Image (cartoon, rainbow, N blue to C red):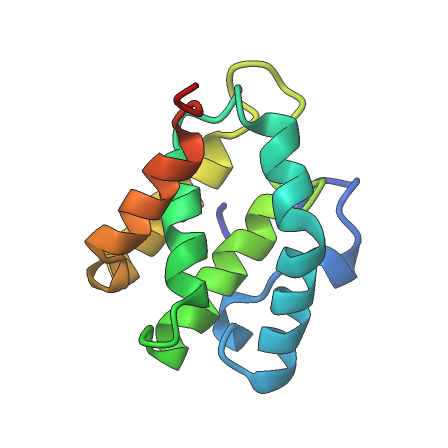
Length: 134
């Protein structure tokens, strides 16, 4: 978004995530709360519509890993909080393009903290997404 661009009128100022404050302890707590409350309901709601869900789940498990550095967890929580927000730059309800901003945020996150996403996190995501062998 350019410096002159304005957020969607549906986004309340309190819901906008300031990237520069992602690692401030209070912001980290707020992001963790948003993710804790909204992550699994959002995943269940959009599972069939989000082609990058394996990456979202991988970073989720990375954030929950005690070996992941705090700075990486802070950035992951900020990105996941953006993912769970019901309103964002491109509303998720827009067919075909609604998740492009979320995909861009997750791609940028992986470019920055991707080295912290281990094979075990990706395996947990694949296991979660695979149908139960019955």
